[in-house]
Image 1 (cartoon, rainbow, N blue to C red):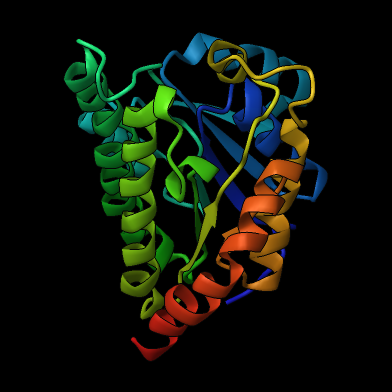
Image 2: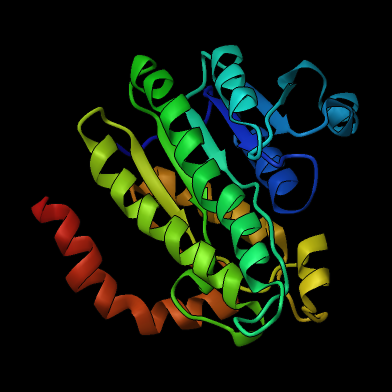
Length: 247
């Protein structure tokens, strides 16, 4: 199911900044014909249109608004690759008074939003020959940091859903990619307290399209992610990968 993004149509959620913007730009560098910039506010994508012209098409998509996801799938009926990059983070430990509210907020976008994106776009990808669905998870999906416990829980859940999607979408020829960045230089990274040693979002973008080209499920794009991914490798090969092959 591996393929090159050249001459393909791509949709990126949260495409107006940070990792999403890097993903959009990497798709264009690799020869994508068109990239849908799926954003909550259409105006936020205007600078991308000014820079790249009609190769970038803004479309409204808000992970908190299921109707907008359904409408975006109808608009982007020619899409070959969907990259669900958008997500939210609250700095909350399990003992914080607002932990439940934080987790509900994060689950709504990071997990329920993923499910709704997958349900809306799976038929589109099938109709267009299979394509690929890439989900931005995190190193926080395989290990928990106490200060971000609720975020880690939501990302662990989104990783579980991603594994299920890999099996569910295989029959229709859709490649599923699970991306697990560590500290990255983004606005969210600043909010989380990542220092100057955080890696560039360009590494994440390149890792996604390299994985699509190589038919690879797991992506550990940066130096912290690679350390965690290296430790996780045996489990991934013997449980995650093996289970998927048996299924």
